Length: 400
Image (cartoon, rainbow, N blue to C red; front, side, top):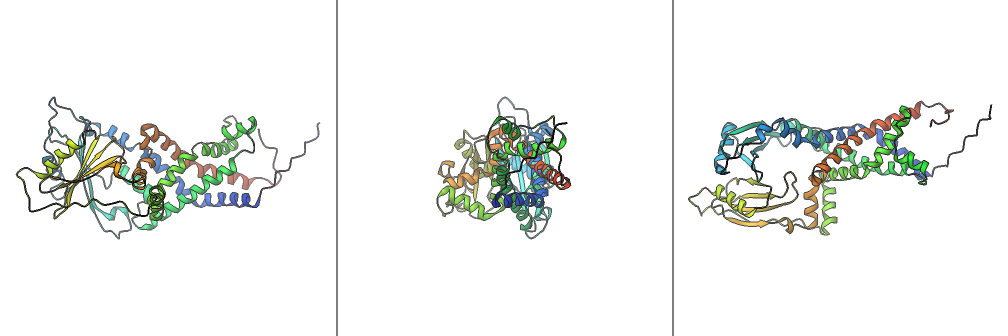
């Protein structure tokens, strides 16, 4: 029987490394449930558009007549309000360049601003879909209780309207950023010879569960680290005002806020035509290359009609805005995407980056898998810690 080979002594870790490892462990355990929650809700929400439109395909898509003539927008707006009982006012309308899309009419009214729970902070929030060629209502949805809307608010703040909800999300996200960076330090191989390369960049699927779990934590964590950092940092833009302001200042190179467009409606001037329809026609002529046009009706007084031309079927970052007189439909002012400073543009991209939509379907797929792996990291990390805790004082020779 050959003599047992002496165990090689491990290289002693530096004080900083030991502290980093200790923080990685205990901060991971502390924030693990929140990170898991964010990852799972992020996964579910990633394809909300595709899933919703698949389930309600007959409601979201319509037959297109040969002349493609649409009902005046003011009549469609009135139809949507009647479908909701006549007591709710439409606050935002989405029309589409894609001919077979139903147009969307949204209503929203805030509830108690001091309410603790999300549902109490909203009076109503509805969606009405209408065939723009026939004026027929295809769907009425209470978005206050819509599945993906609830998932979004769970992801946002645990359905908590109080600031504490986003504080919990925000600080857990900051911890997650630290865990990603410290995990990278712990994972980084000392040299890239083939044996270390295989251990660091490949999962050994034929090994026992303990090794597979270890590889899934380290290897998968490495592959999605950059995407997870992007998801985390864009999430922090919403969680903390100070972080959003910092991003704006760094990107724009200025502490000055974006310029507001000065425009007011003149109630002393009127026209025979319906001003809202005139405003929409102006928006259509102006935004010929827009994929969709959003219309926000004015609320009276000197308020203006807002028309937003979005370039992108799903994204929200690339848009121009028109301000129009609510009494005449006359164009009063315009602000283009190109007029925005770098800070405005970056903050405007935040949502589309966070959900991956800025890169289209490939970006959403990446966001989905990154969220899924992020949700798994607290689980695989806990299993690694629990295994070490149960390990005997005299460990057996490491398995291959």
